[in-house]
Length: 257
Image 1 (cartoon, rainbow, N blue to C red):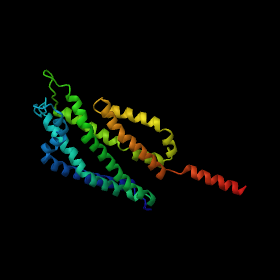
Image 2 (image 1 turned 180 degrees about the vertical axis):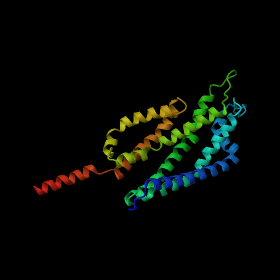
Image 3 (image 1 turned 30 degrees about the vertical axis):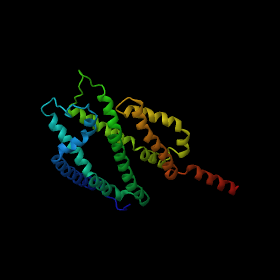
Image 4 (image 1 turned 180 degrees about the horizontal axis):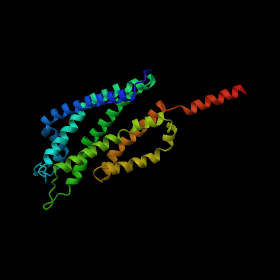
């Protein structure tokens, strides 16, 4: 941590500089992704295409003149932001690092790395495992007089909401780490509340999973239960050792008496 205090205006100038660099990185990523917009959208559509009944064309529709254009813009912006994440994280690090103590700095980079891995893992799990099952369920209602047709806007909004939900849900160990560092939870507490946590996990799985069948919900709940067990271990390793310190205080008090 630097001992020299920066004036408030200098902090604002530094923040503006970091934001400008991040915005430029997102803009460059946007231009790169816009050149491959159709390929990116096709990758996003793959689980939907594979779930459609055989013989039906894999096509989306758009019901407004600007809908397809803005959908491609959103896809490119999302992809550009993903490409710019390393630059954005580096700018965040450069901005906050001078105000951190050494013991705080050693946690920052591992937390950022773990958060990125868990988020990407959750989004990938939703894309590769849950989407095929969910879309297969939705398209199973097709018949001779009912044809599954989705607009580009609806498909993009639905897919991105689901991917973000899966990514955020998989941040459970990181969330538990912060609660443990604040002294709000302990590993013993998580073990005692395990049965209630499993019930809550199944409720979350039912809310997040796109299809209401039990198999899809169990498919979502299984990894969350494993993440909860991993959180118990993380809290045990990195949480505040309140009981241990309390025990040492009692021992010192007894020795003085």
